[in-house]
Length: 228
Ligand code: HEC
Figure 1 (cartoon, rainbow, N blue to C red):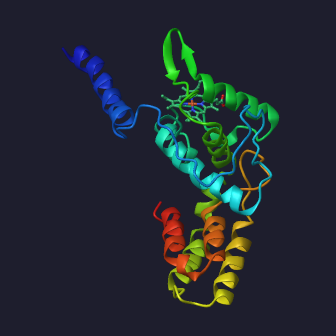
Figure 2: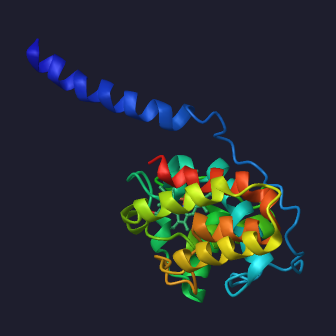
């Protein structure tokens, strides 16, 4: 009898671990992504990320939309914030190069099957070209989460400053704080080798650039990395 229990137990444990992965998010079917706000792309699929060198508004929009697309379609296998829990490869390390793009495009369009079992569903026809490259941009701009965590004290102090900024503060004050956030954010590199990482500090700075009224949302965003 004991041998039967010891054989059954690991199965029960692995089922218990799998169940939340498979069912927990509820959105297991691939989902279209709203790409409003991103520039149009030509009808033909690009073979390289068109936004790798993008600056300012386009880059931040791509990261914002890419994060949503990633969370609703990829995170359940590839991990929240693209940090793999071991079920599927850690995409943060996929090289930001034309070779990496080719590999990315092949997988996202066609998925992956092994011995007749779908290991990754195809997203062709579900995600439009903008969504595909926005997700790519999000993935390749991920900083090293451990490095970010190591700067926790500094980030917490910046969070408090942003939170304390009155929403009706003058433009000068908002711009100065944005510059401070940018300077702190510039210390992080992308794990993929992309030209730059986009951290919540950079995103918060970008929000403050359009005015102090965005301070509460920017503070909330920074707070997200402090909770871990
Ligand atoms: C049902 C689980 C699942 C989902 C959902 C999923 N993937 Fe995957 N993905 C996998 C597995 C498993 C592999 C490994 C396949 C292989 O051996 O090449 C993989 C491989 C990849 C690769 C190749 C990585 C490498 O290093 O070789 C890329 C790129 C990729 N996935 C992107 C995505 C993106 C982007 C999404 C969301 C739009 C997504 N995947 C959704 C399971 C999934």
